Image (cartoon, rainbow, N blue to C red; front, side):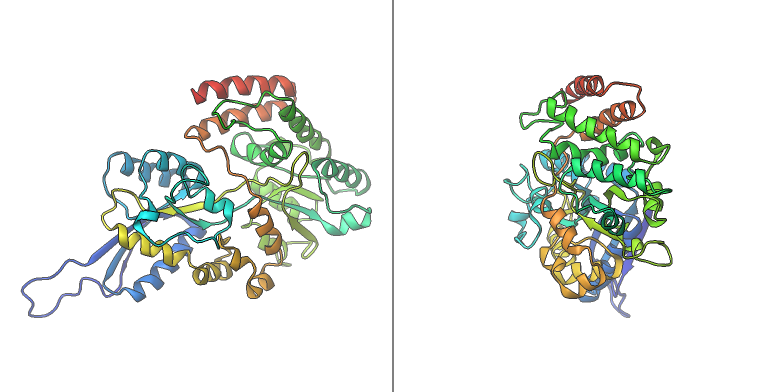
Length: 411
Protein backbone atom coordinates (compact mmCIF):
# COMPACT_ATOMS: atom_id res chain seq x y z
CA UNK A 1 0.00 0.00 0.00
CA UNK A 2 1.26 3.45 -0.86
CA UNK A 3 -0.07 6.63 0.75
CA UNK A 4 0.54 9.93 -0.99
CA UNK A 5 -0.23 13.15 0.85
CA UNK A 6 -0.63 16.51 -0.87
CA UNK A 7 0.15 19.47 1.34
CA UNK A 8 -0.41 22.44 -0.90
CA UNK A 9 -0.37 25.60 1.18
CA UNK A 10 -2.36 23.73 3.79
CA UNK A 11 -2.32 24.09 7.54
CA UNK A 12 0.06 27.04 7.47
CA UNK A 13 1.18 28.24 10.89
CA UNK A 14 0.94 31.99 11.27
CA UNK A 15 3.60 33.58 13.46
CA UNK A 16 2.14 35.07 16.57
CA UNK A 17 -1.17 33.24 16.20
CA UNK A 18 -2.55 31.82 19.43
CA UNK A 19 -4.55 29.11 17.65
CA UNK A 20 -4.70 27.39 14.29
CA UNK A 21 -7.68 26.29 12.31
CA UNK A 22 -7.63 22.70 11.07
CA UNK A 23 -7.14 22.47 7.31
CA UNK A 24 -9.87 20.92 5.19
CA UNK A 25 -9.04 17.30 4.36
CA UNK A 26 -10.07 14.85 1.64
CA UNK A 27 -9.07 11.17 1.55
CA UNK A 28 -9.06 9.19 -1.70
CA UNK A 29 -8.70 5.41 -2.11
CA UNK A 30 -7.61 4.51 -5.63
CA UNK A 31 -5.70 2.06 -7.77
CA UNK A 32 -1.95 1.86 -8.25
CA UNK A 33 -0.03 1.90 -11.54
CA UNK A 34 -1.23 4.07 -14.42
CA UNK A 35 -4.46 4.95 -12.65
CA UNK A 36 -2.44 6.27 -9.70
CA UNK A 37 -0.56 8.60 -12.05
CA UNK A 38 -3.87 9.86 -13.46
CA UNK A 39 -5.33 10.50 -9.99
CA UNK A 40 -2.04 12.06 -8.91
CA UNK A 41 -2.28 14.65 -11.69
CA UNK A 42 -5.92 15.28 -10.78
CA UNK A 43 -4.99 15.94 -7.14
CA UNK A 44 -2.13 18.23 -8.18
CA UNK A 45 -4.36 20.33 -10.40
CA UNK A 46 -7.32 20.32 -8.01
CA UNK A 47 -5.29 21.42 -4.99
CA UNK A 48 -3.78 24.21 -7.06
CA UNK A 49 -7.33 25.59 -7.26
CA UNK A 50 -8.02 24.83 -3.59
CA UNK A 51 -4.76 25.66 -1.76
CA UNK A 52 -6.24 25.20 1.71
CA UNK A 53 -7.10 21.56 1.03
CA UNK A 54 -5.03 18.62 2.28
CA UNK A 55 -5.44 15.45 0.21
CA UNK A 56 -4.42 11.97 1.33
CA UNK A 57 -4.42 9.37 -1.43
CA UNK A 58 -3.96 5.61 -1.15
CA UNK A 59 -2.47 3.74 -4.14
CA UNK A 60 -3.55 0.11 -3.91
CA UNK A 61 -3.59 -3.02 -6.09
CA UNK A 62 -6.98 -4.42 -7.18
CA UNK A 63 -7.41 -6.83 -4.25
CA UNK A 64 -6.01 -4.45 -1.66
CA UNK A 65 -8.29 -1.62 -2.76
CA UNK A 66 -11.36 -3.81 -2.63
CA UNK A 67 -10.47 -5.03 0.85
CA UNK A 68 -9.79 -1.54 2.23
CA UNK A 69 -12.93 0.12 0.92
CA UNK A 70 -15.15 -2.85 1.82
CA UNK A 71 -13.95 -2.98 5.43
CA UNK A 72 -14.40 0.77 5.82
CA UNK A 73 -17.93 0.58 4.38
CA UNK A 74 -19.00 -2.38 6.53
CA UNK A 75 -17.67 -0.82 9.71
CA UNK A 76 -18.93 2.67 8.81
CA UNK A 77 -15.43 3.90 9.56
CA UNK A 78 -15.70 7.01 7.42
CA UNK A 79 -12.14 6.51 6.22
CA UNK A 80 -12.61 7.83 2.68
CA UNK A 81 -14.27 10.71 0.86
CA UNK A 82 -13.74 9.33 -2.65
CA UNK A 83 -13.26 5.71 -3.66
CA UNK A 84 -12.40 4.08 -6.96
CA UNK A 85 -14.47 0.98 -7.77
CA UNK A 86 -14.30 -1.80 -10.33
CA UNK A 87 -17.77 -1.88 -11.89
CA UNK A 88 -18.23 -5.49 -10.71
CA UNK A 89 -17.87 -4.56 -7.02
CA UNK A 90 -20.04 -1.49 -7.42
CA UNK A 91 -23.17 -3.66 -7.26
CA UNK A 92 -22.37 -4.71 -3.70
CA UNK A 93 -21.64 -1.13 -2.60
CA UNK A 94 -24.78 0.27 -4.20
CA UNK A 95 -27.11 -2.50 -3.05
CA UNK A 96 -25.89 -2.26 0.55
CA UNK A 97 -26.30 1.51 0.71
CA UNK A 98 -22.57 2.13 1.06
CA UNK A 99 -22.44 4.87 -1.59
CA UNK A 100 -24.04 8.31 -1.47
CA UNK A 101 -26.79 9.12 -3.96
CA UNK A 102 -24.97 11.56 -6.24
CA UNK A 103 -28.24 12.84 -7.67
CA UNK A 104 -29.10 14.08 -4.18
CA UNK A 105 -25.55 15.21 -3.40
CA UNK A 106 -25.66 17.29 -6.60
CA UNK A 107 -23.62 17.80 -9.71
CA UNK A 108 -25.46 15.52 -12.12
CA UNK A 109 -24.14 12.80 -14.43
CA UNK A 110 -24.75 14.16 -17.92
CA UNK A 111 -25.41 12.24 -21.13
CA UNK A 112 -21.97 12.92 -22.59
CA UNK A 113 -20.85 9.88 -20.60
CA UNK A 114 -21.12 6.79 -22.83
CA UNK A 115 -24.37 5.04 -21.88
CA UNK A 116 -23.13 1.56 -20.82
CA UNK A 117 -20.59 3.16 -18.46
CA UNK A 118 -23.25 5.52 -17.14
CA UNK A 119 -25.70 2.65 -16.69
CA UNK A 120 -23.39 0.65 -14.39
CA UNK A 121 -23.00 3.79 -12.26
CA UNK A 122 -26.68 3.46 -11.32
CA UNK A 123 -28.60 1.01 -9.13
CA UNK A 124 -30.68 -0.71 -10.27
CA UNK A 125 -28.49 -0.73 -13.35
CA UNK A 126 -29.58 1.79 -15.97
CA UNK A 127 -32.67 2.97 -14.08
CA UNK A 128 -31.86 3.90 -10.47
CA UNK A 129 -30.07 6.89 -8.95
CA UNK A 130 -26.43 7.54 -9.81
CA UNK A 131 -24.22 6.24 -7.03
CA UNK A 132 -21.00 6.75 -8.98
CA UNK A 133 -19.53 8.50 -12.01
CA UNK A 134 -17.66 6.54 -14.72
CA UNK A 135 -13.96 7.43 -14.62
CA UNK A 136 -12.15 4.89 -16.86
CA UNK A 137 -13.86 3.55 -19.97
CA UNK A 138 -12.12 0.21 -20.30
CA UNK A 139 -13.71 -2.04 -22.91
CA UNK A 140 -12.65 -5.32 -24.50
CA UNK A 141 -11.54 -4.89 -28.12
CA UNK A 142 -10.77 -7.23 -31.05
CA UNK A 143 -7.66 -7.01 -33.26
CA UNK A 144 -6.60 -8.47 -36.60
CA UNK A 145 -3.74 -8.14 -39.11
CA UNK A 146 -5.28 -6.15 -41.95
CA UNK A 147 -2.36 -6.87 -44.27
CA UNK A 148 -2.87 -10.63 -43.93
CA UNK A 149 -6.63 -10.32 -44.29
CA UNK A 150 -6.16 -8.28 -47.47
CA UNK A 151 -3.57 -10.73 -48.81
CA UNK A 152 -5.99 -13.67 -48.47
CA UNK A 153 -9.08 -11.81 -49.64
CA UNK A 154 -10.68 -11.73 -46.20
CA UNK A 155 -13.02 -8.94 -45.16
CA UNK A 156 -13.46 -7.35 -41.77
CA UNK A 157 -15.09 -10.14 -39.71
CA UNK A 158 -18.74 -9.41 -38.98
CA UNK A 159 -19.44 -12.65 -37.10
CA UNK A 160 -17.57 -15.15 -34.95
CA UNK A 161 -18.14 -17.75 -37.66
CA UNK A 162 -16.14 -15.52 -40.02
CA UNK A 163 -13.42 -15.23 -37.35
CA UNK A 164 -13.02 -19.02 -37.27
CA UNK A 165 -12.90 -19.20 -41.07
CA UNK A 166 -10.28 -16.43 -41.27
CA UNK A 167 -8.15 -18.04 -38.56
CA UNK A 168 -8.26 -21.33 -40.49
CA UNK A 169 -7.29 -19.72 -43.81
CA UNK A 170 -4.32 -17.82 -42.38
CA UNK A 171 -3.13 -20.65 -40.17
CA UNK A 172 -3.02 -22.97 -43.19
CA UNK A 173 -1.38 -20.50 -45.59
CA UNK A 174 1.01 -18.36 -43.50
CA UNK A 175 3.98 -20.35 -42.10
CA UNK A 176 5.00 -19.18 -38.67
CA UNK A 177 1.77 -17.27 -38.06
CA UNK A 178 -1.05 -18.62 -35.92
CA UNK A 179 -4.55 -17.84 -37.06
CA UNK A 180 -5.67 -16.63 -33.64
CA UNK A 181 -4.47 -16.09 -30.09
CA UNK A 182 -6.34 -15.70 -26.80
CA UNK A 183 -5.91 -16.05 -23.06
CA UNK A 184 -6.54 -19.65 -21.99
CA UNK A 185 -5.51 -19.37 -18.34
CA UNK A 186 -8.36 -20.39 -16.05
CA UNK A 187 -10.28 -17.84 -14.03
CA UNK A 188 -10.72 -14.26 -15.17
CA UNK A 189 -8.52 -14.53 -18.33
CA UNK A 190 -10.41 -17.32 -20.08
CA UNK A 191 -13.80 -16.02 -18.98
CA UNK A 192 -13.04 -12.53 -20.31
CA UNK A 193 -12.19 -13.86 -23.77
CA UNK A 194 -15.25 -16.10 -23.86
CA UNK A 195 -17.91 -13.61 -22.75
CA UNK A 196 -18.22 -11.62 -26.03
CA UNK A 197 -18.69 -14.92 -27.88
CA UNK A 198 -21.26 -16.15 -25.36
CA UNK A 199 -23.24 -12.90 -25.41
CA UNK A 200 -23.11 -12.62 -29.20
CA UNK A 201 -24.82 -16.02 -29.36
CA UNK A 202 -27.62 -14.65 -27.20
CA UNK A 203 -26.64 -16.76 -24.18
CA UNK A 204 -26.33 -15.60 -20.59
CA UNK A 205 -24.62 -16.83 -17.42
CA UNK A 206 -27.24 -15.38 -15.11
CA UNK A 207 -30.74 -14.43 -16.18
CA UNK A 208 -32.67 -11.31 -15.24
CA UNK A 209 -34.48 -13.38 -12.60
CA UNK A 210 -31.15 -14.24 -10.95
CA UNK A 211 -31.09 -17.88 -12.06
CA UNK A 212 -28.13 -19.74 -13.60
CA UNK A 213 -28.64 -20.04 -17.37
CA UNK A 214 -25.44 -21.54 -18.77
CA UNK A 215 -26.98 -24.93 -19.56
CA UNK A 216 -28.57 -23.83 -22.83
CA UNK A 217 -28.32 -24.59 -26.54
CA UNK A 218 -27.04 -21.06 -27.23
CA UNK A 219 -24.29 -21.37 -24.62
CA UNK A 220 -23.25 -24.75 -26.04
CA UNK A 221 -23.04 -23.32 -29.56
CA UNK A 222 -20.90 -20.47 -28.23
CA UNK A 223 -18.56 -22.80 -26.36
CA UNK A 224 -18.14 -25.13 -29.34
CA UNK A 225 -17.20 -22.17 -31.53
CA UNK A 226 -14.75 -20.92 -28.90
CA UNK A 227 -13.12 -24.34 -28.61
CA UNK A 228 -12.80 -24.61 -32.40
CA UNK A 229 -10.39 -21.65 -32.32
CA UNK A 230 -7.80 -23.74 -30.48
CA UNK A 231 -6.93 -25.61 -33.69
CA UNK A 232 -5.56 -22.36 -35.12
CA UNK A 233 -3.92 -21.03 -31.94
CA UNK A 234 -0.31 -21.45 -30.75
CA UNK A 235 0.64 -24.63 -28.91
CA UNK A 236 0.07 -24.17 -25.18
CA UNK A 237 -2.58 -21.46 -25.60
CA UNK A 238 -4.44 -22.93 -22.62
CA UNK A 239 -1.73 -21.36 -20.43
CA UNK A 240 -1.56 -18.02 -22.26
CA UNK A 241 -2.19 -14.80 -20.37
CA UNK A 242 -1.96 -11.12 -21.28
CA UNK A 243 1.80 -10.97 -21.86
CA UNK A 244 1.73 -13.89 -24.33
CA UNK A 245 -1.16 -12.36 -26.27
CA UNK A 246 0.54 -8.96 -26.46
CA UNK A 247 3.83 -10.54 -27.53
CA UNK A 248 2.15 -12.53 -30.31
CA UNK A 249 0.54 -9.36 -31.66
CA UNK A 250 3.67 -7.21 -31.47
CA UNK A 251 5.94 -9.90 -32.90
CA UNK A 252 3.61 -10.48 -35.82
CA UNK A 253 3.17 -14.17 -35.04
CA UNK A 254 -0.63 -14.12 -34.98
CA UNK A 255 -3.35 -12.83 -37.28
CA UNK A 256 -6.18 -12.34 -34.77
CA UNK A 257 -6.52 -11.58 -31.07
CA UNK A 258 -10.05 -12.08 -29.78
CA UNK A 259 -9.22 -9.85 -26.79
CA UNK A 260 -7.29 -6.60 -26.65
CA UNK A 261 -7.48 -3.86 -24.01
CA UNK A 262 -6.97 -0.12 -24.55
CA UNK A 263 -3.79 -0.09 -22.47
CA UNK A 264 -2.19 -2.58 -24.89
CA UNK A 265 -3.04 -0.67 -28.06
CA UNK A 266 -0.42 2.15 -28.15
CA UNK A 267 2.47 -0.35 -28.23
CA UNK A 268 1.13 -1.92 -31.42
CA UNK A 269 1.99 1.21 -33.43
CA UNK A 270 5.36 1.79 -31.73
CA UNK A 271 8.15 0.63 -34.10
CA UNK A 272 10.49 0.27 -31.14
CA UNK A 273 8.16 -2.36 -29.64
CA UNK A 274 6.21 -3.83 -32.55
CA UNK A 275 7.37 -5.58 -35.73
CA UNK A 276 4.04 -4.77 -37.40
CA UNK A 277 3.36 -1.07 -36.64
CA UNK A 278 0.27 0.28 -38.38
CA UNK A 279 -0.81 -3.13 -39.67
CA UNK A 280 -3.12 -4.16 -36.84
CA UNK A 281 -6.74 -3.10 -37.11
CA UNK A 282 -8.71 -2.65 -33.89
CA UNK A 283 -12.48 -3.00 -33.74
CA UNK A 284 -15.41 -3.97 -31.54
CA UNK A 285 -15.87 -7.72 -31.15
CA UNK A 286 -17.97 -9.29 -33.95
CA UNK A 287 -21.58 -10.29 -33.48
CA UNK A 288 -23.30 -13.60 -34.21
CA UNK A 289 -26.98 -14.20 -33.38
CA UNK A 290 -27.05 -10.63 -32.10
CA UNK A 291 -24.75 -7.63 -32.59
CA UNK A 292 -21.35 -6.96 -31.02
CA UNK A 293 -21.22 -7.55 -27.27
CA UNK A 294 -17.75 -6.62 -25.96
CA UNK A 295 -17.15 -6.78 -22.23
CA UNK A 296 -17.23 -3.57 -20.23
CA UNK A 297 -14.41 -3.10 -17.72
CA UNK A 298 -15.15 0.36 -16.35
CA UNK A 299 -13.75 1.95 -13.21
CA UNK A 300 -16.04 4.26 -11.28
CA UNK A 301 -15.65 6.98 -8.66
CA UNK A 302 -18.07 7.24 -5.74
CA UNK A 303 -18.56 8.99 -2.42
CA UNK A 304 -19.13 6.66 0.57
CA UNK A 305 -22.25 7.37 2.60
CA UNK A 306 -20.07 7.72 5.71
CA UNK A 307 -17.62 10.16 4.09
CA UNK A 308 -16.50 12.97 6.38
CA UNK A 309 -16.28 15.47 3.51
CA UNK A 310 -18.86 14.30 0.94
CA UNK A 311 -19.40 17.66 -0.78
CA UNK A 312 -15.68 18.06 -1.45
CA UNK A 313 -15.50 14.47 -2.67
CA UNK A 314 -18.36 15.07 -5.10
CA UNK A 315 -16.73 18.25 -6.40
CA UNK A 316 -13.43 16.43 -6.96
CA UNK A 317 -15.21 13.67 -8.92
CA UNK A 318 -16.82 16.31 -11.16
CA UNK A 319 -13.37 17.80 -11.78
CA UNK A 320 -11.62 14.52 -12.64
CA UNK A 321 -14.44 13.37 -14.95
CA UNK A 322 -14.88 16.69 -16.77
CA UNK A 323 -14.40 16.62 -20.56
CA UNK A 324 -11.30 18.82 -20.30
CA UNK A 325 -9.57 16.63 -17.74
CA UNK A 326 -10.64 13.38 -19.44
CA UNK A 327 -8.98 14.64 -22.62
CA UNK A 328 -5.79 15.49 -20.75
CA UNK A 329 -5.68 12.06 -19.08
CA UNK A 330 -6.15 10.40 -22.43
CA UNK A 331 -3.35 12.36 -24.11
CA UNK A 332 -0.88 12.12 -21.22
CA UNK A 333 -1.55 8.65 -19.82
CA UNK A 334 -3.70 6.85 -22.38
CA UNK A 335 -6.50 6.56 -19.82
CA UNK A 336 -9.61 5.42 -21.75
CA UNK A 337 -12.21 8.20 -21.52
CA UNK A 338 -15.81 7.69 -20.49
CA UNK A 339 -17.05 10.79 -22.33
CA UNK A 340 -18.16 10.43 -25.95
CA UNK A 341 -16.99 13.97 -26.77
CA UNK A 342 -13.37 13.07 -25.98
CA UNK A 343 -13.46 10.17 -28.45
CA UNK A 344 -14.57 12.64 -31.15
CA UNK A 345 -11.82 15.15 -30.38
CA UNK A 346 -9.52 15.61 -33.41
CA UNK A 347 -6.35 15.94 -31.32
CA UNK A 348 -7.12 12.74 -29.45
CA UNK A 349 -7.95 10.79 -32.63
CA UNK A 350 -4.72 12.01 -34.23
CA UNK A 351 -2.81 10.31 -31.41
CA UNK A 352 -5.01 7.20 -31.09
CA UNK A 353 -6.28 6.19 -34.56
CA UNK A 354 -8.41 3.38 -33.10
CA UNK A 355 -10.52 5.66 -30.86
CA UNK A 356 -13.54 5.70 -33.22
CA UNK A 357 -13.57 1.88 -33.04
CA UNK A 358 -12.99 2.00 -29.29
CA UNK A 359 -15.99 4.22 -28.63
CA UNK A 360 -18.10 1.99 -30.90
CA UNK A 361 -17.11 -0.94 -28.71
CA UNK A 362 -17.82 1.06 -25.57
CA UNK A 363 -21.27 2.04 -26.84
CA UNK A 364 -22.09 -1.67 -27.40
CA UNK A 365 -20.36 -2.92 -24.26
CA UNK A 366 -22.06 -5.39 -21.94
CA UNK A 367 -21.51 -5.38 -18.18
CA UNK A 368 -20.84 -8.58 -16.32
CA UNK A 369 -23.88 -9.85 -14.36
CA UNK A 370 -24.94 -7.32 -11.73
CA UNK A 371 -24.70 -9.71 -8.82
CA UNK A 372 -22.74 -9.66 -5.56
CA UNK A 373 -21.46 -13.18 -6.23
CA UNK A 374 -19.74 -12.43 -9.54
CA UNK A 375 -16.22 -13.29 -8.30
CA UNK A 376 -17.42 -16.77 -7.29
CA UNK A 377 -19.34 -17.27 -10.53
CA UNK A 378 -16.34 -16.17 -12.61
CA UNK A 379 -14.03 -18.60 -10.80
CA UNK A 380 -16.43 -21.50 -11.38
CA UNK A 381 -16.93 -20.73 -15.05
CA UNK A 382 -13.19 -20.20 -15.56
CA UNK A 383 -12.39 -23.65 -14.16
CA UNK A 384 -14.87 -25.45 -16.41
CA UNK A 385 -13.99 -23.47 -19.52
CA UNK A 386 -10.37 -24.53 -19.18
CA UNK A 387 -11.34 -28.15 -18.57
CA UNK A 388 -13.20 -28.03 -21.87
CA UNK A 389 -10.29 -26.25 -23.58
CA UNK A 390 -7.74 -28.90 -22.59
CA UNK A 391 -10.14 -31.69 -23.54
CA UNK A 392 -10.71 -32.98 -20.02
CA UNK A 393 -14.49 -32.47 -20.32
CA UNK A 394 -16.97 -32.47 -23.17
CA UNK A 395 -18.44 -28.99 -23.79
CA UNK A 396 -21.99 -29.91 -22.79
CA UNK A 397 -20.85 -31.61 -19.59
CA UNK A 398 -18.64 -28.63 -18.70
CA UNK A 399 -21.53 -26.20 -19.10
CA UNK A 400 -23.96 -28.45 -17.23
CA UNK A 401 -21.64 -28.90 -14.24
CA UNK A 402 -20.65 -25.23 -14.21
CA UNK A 403 -24.31 -24.25 -14.24
CA UNK A 404 -25.06 -26.47 -11.24
CA UNK A 405 -22.23 -24.95 -9.21
CA UNK A 406 -23.17 -21.43 -10.25
CA UNK A 407 -26.78 -22.06 -9.21
CA UNK A 408 -25.53 -23.08 -5.74
CA UNK A 409 -23.29 -20.01 -5.53
CA UNK A 410 -26.19 -17.74 -6.41
CA UNK A 411 -28.28 -19.21 -3.60
